Image (cartoon, rainbow, N blue to C red; front, side, top):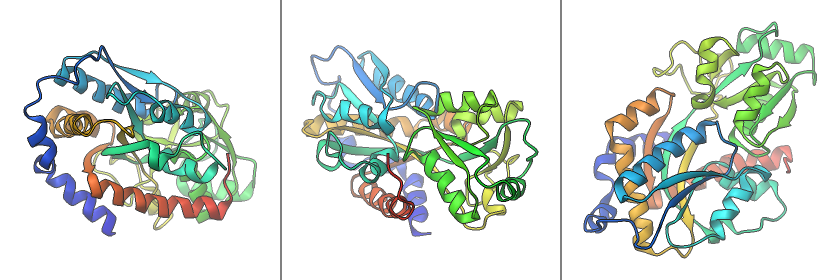
Length: 327
């Protein structure tokens, strides 16, 4: 697949991919003057995969720029409240959006948005990519992906699945699975993956395609039953889990996170934020921490990141239109 090849190639040379960002930011000794704090805005509830990635970013920002950095969780409305907070927020580098696939999907599931994603936000760097992990609650007579498909077909509409909101990567992973396997499950959206997986553990929902970074510990502890990763093949980062594609050929549905700022933020500040992100992704400790939760650093920027977003828009926008998904 051409997209994967390009991303893998860029990841392999991330040490030299910073280009002009590195040269221009080398002379900077501090974050833009006058800032008292930096907020990384996460448009989901605390406790999910975005929490893990966001904390890595705030640690790096604080360390590199000598300015306190904190997470600000702004969940709701399929992440549009948090995205709007940054889109209409200050243009001085004090707010950085941790963006995800919702940046694209909300353009299709809402009739209108209180901001223009293409004009009011500037995507800077794709930080990570990570698969989802298909899990079911304990107590269901389901142990494998094949079991789930058979049970869902035998009991159409009886199973439900949780997601972190309409149009989220978790939601679309489940809808793609339903379409591909000709099964029917009812959608229960939450404001983030943390409350959704809590209800999965509690037995209040049946199925969830959660970000692997978020639900890995629960799966390994046996609190939920893991059926498979949404990777093309079994992942060397978590070889104990099968790939859903082993049972459903061609099925893949991963997630990703990126960094964005409000449009109108000065170019030198955009460059400073991007270089900080790229420096973070090159660090051995970061790579190790990401691998521990089945995630990989990426480091796409500029036209390469824009091309990736265009590919994602084509893939998921088509699915949303086909299925008529609306918020």
